[in-house]
Image (cartoon, rainbow, N blue to C red; front, top):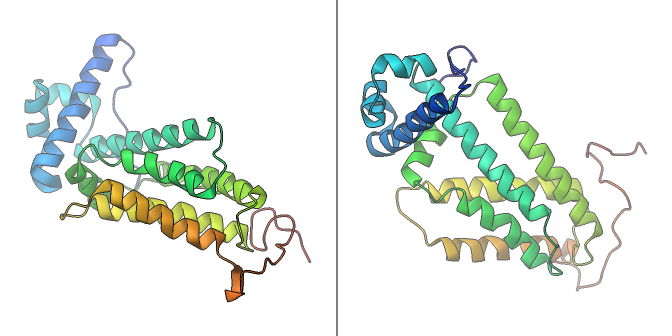
Length: 231
């Protein structure tokens, strides 16, 4: 796995439709090759052969297979972010259970194309500073949106909405990544139902093990959040 940014940038940014089509062919071929052969055997020669271009043409666009895998990973992140943002633009369901389902479903859908490719991206995807910043930015956006929702929804009983928002975002992402990419398959509908039930119960259960009595939550953002007020 590459951790630095060197050698991960595409060499050629397409400016013409034909060049963009060639780049798409390379990425599509790479997705198939990585899924079929894994990372180690997913060579640039195999990618070029699958894309039906010369190896020299491939190197005009990407310096190595890590750069190709990095772009596949970025596109995976962007697709997931776009799906979640489109959900945010829709009318919000009344129940917390359906809201959490709206979080979980697009994340699951974004991981269903090819579990083997997902496994390769998880285990070998390069971690350049630019990619890590993109991951962090996506997470900050989701956490901010989730915290705002938790603070105003009447069913929510958690007291620390900032930590709760981070838990919700991390749980959905990590659980789906782990189970969809696992060698033994899991029924995605059952995964969705159980994940939604687990998170909804956490958010709506009476805090502190009380007998269902409602305890008022502190107004404003929770201590430790990015906008916490000093005491």
